[in-house]
Image (cartoon, rainbow, N blue to C red):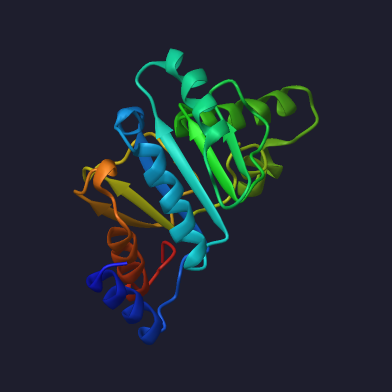
Length: 202
């Protein structure tokens, strides 16, 4: 750890910042094609758990759905500090692991699947429209947990990710590309998260 990294780590400790329990890191298929991309992921997982996270979610947007199986296989060999659960567009079972990876499973698709399931239950007479609550949608999402902090590298724009789950998340954008993302960048995100006053839509 470099001098500046140690300074940031000490600042986080002495300031007694609130830390996120659930961190989402949004990357793209192109990011994963960069040399060393999976090494950076392994490091990011380690940093997250080192600084108190209990869950990490990685939504990966893809341009070509045909690339999903290859990308999913890459995660079979990743050296992660916790169990990893990977889901793609064809999956509808909820992910259940400390590290969750979504490859090509966009937020619109996930939300549409949940609403379609509710519509089928209403059509079958098993559910009244007036009885539908937010929890009914959440129960049908592949990634139901809400991240506290969402980190997006490379640009200040959102991909089609976790549309429902991230409405109250704190968003952190950095122009650092994924291939150059370092521990200091993660610590900066934690510092900014700790300095914010979360409002949860209020």
